Image: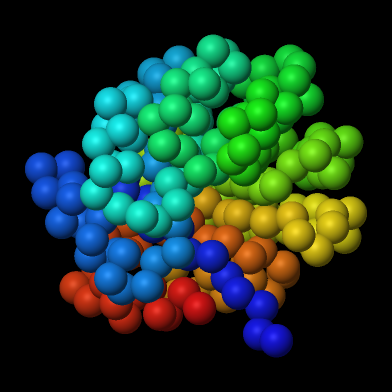
Length: 213
Ligand code: DX5
Ligand code: ZN
């Protein structure tokens, strides 16, 4: 059986005046999930998408909504994002002091729980939580903005985590993913790729998505 790689286009690079159109474009091109970057201007120096937008997106697509919380105090917002329609909720290791209760809280809504690490955070910090997590998100750029350059060193964390994890863990990478860096990450064991700029700024979205596989 060929192992499936989950492609999750990031709408951060979409045209927000034509968001429904841009969501349907990636859906019909065969994307698996839709990646939604939530930023609060505190955890990262940018402010993006909030709860009402997630609610609206939920109404126009059946793709699983892969919500990446780049916010402080994520525990305060798990319930509202789960009720807004998130299928995967990923929060940052660096944003909280007590990880396990937040994983449990996310899973209490019967959705997938993800934990993300920034480029300077070592892979080892996620090890104690691997048995509880559905997904680990390895940032391959500093979180905050689309269109940045892939940091190759971050890919070294993929095999370290894969070696400790069960077969079912989703290892996702996010930041600077294109046809070349995707190949590096999947060869190291990543099985979910987030891509914003590469997909949405491409002249042929279908071809761009296929070139990641
Ligand atoms: C960055 C976000 C990413 C971003 C990726 O903080 O988490 O999801 O949209 O954008 P690209 O693929 O353009 O690097
Ligand atoms: Zn993201």
